[in-house]
Length: 230
Image 1: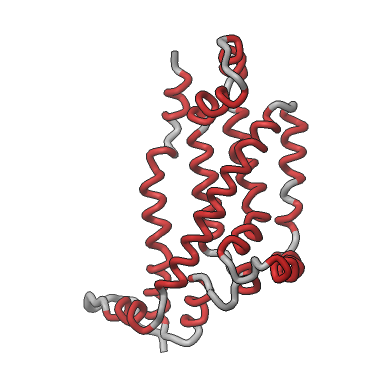
Image 2 (image 1 turned 90 degrees about the vertical axis):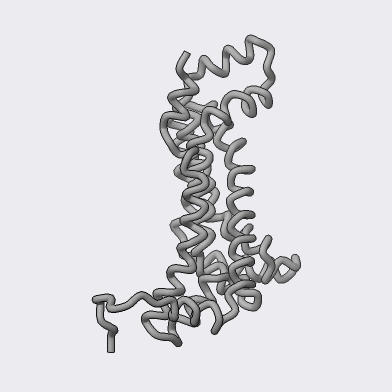
């Protein structure tokens, strides 16, 4: 029987049950570790890839970046099974880094696409003027382009992090022993009550809210426009 939708009293009992009745600390640490590895790798690989694509014509750059999404068109189970066989041989199975590498197959194309859009929105004269003043490619990228495109870069990191945070298919195949938080919560939700499930949903949401609030100041459009004024 479903509980009443009208609240009659304030209670933390369901949240206490979720926190005390199940071991969520280790799965949460595993999920956080994987999510930050995925986000970091996505930015580390996505920035040079997007910068290289930005040197091409808009048509060719968009064609190549769209081709990268072919991996996203395949069911995750089709990719996860052969990847798990390879990771068993390499000793990456059931590890945080191995799971992050697998999730990167889906996350990286979106990261490149977002950062490419941020680079394409910048005037090419900025880079040309920096090169005239004696700045090399690395200096131009790190001191001018990345700071001006940081809104798109932060957005790409945040989306990559969130995609990894609640990813299920790769996690259940590549990390079934040291499970991530979504797997543990799914198992407990199917055994518990609706109120306990709501408490689990709140636990999953809190890290996302915290990270979004922390990075929200970098997601405002005036950072980009302010950098181009004058």
